[in-house]
Length: 101
Image (cartoon, rainbow, N blue to C red; front, side, top):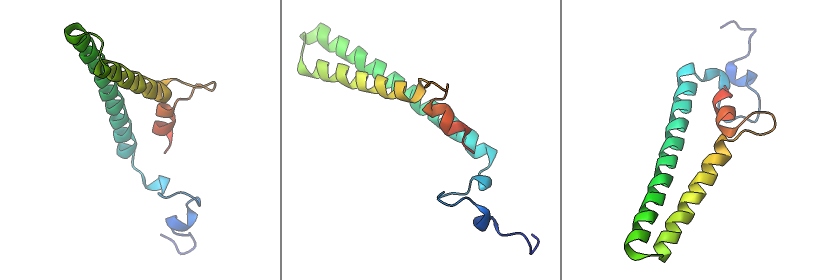
């Protein structure tokens, strides 16, 4: 490093907790893979909650636990939709978090 150039921590934009230039591409891709895995597991859990509520309804009829399972599944579906559905600009929270270097 030449003496005229400032160190990386002095050139980094202020207000960021981490230095984006220090992140490697593998870190960005691993973040995308982990986010996709988390969203997939959330969808699977919501479908399993609905399946469990259906089995509970078939066995005992309508019960409070069945309705709580349905409500929990709807909350999970809403959370995944918030992350995945794009806005007017065509950006979603998933694509915005992955593209940020």
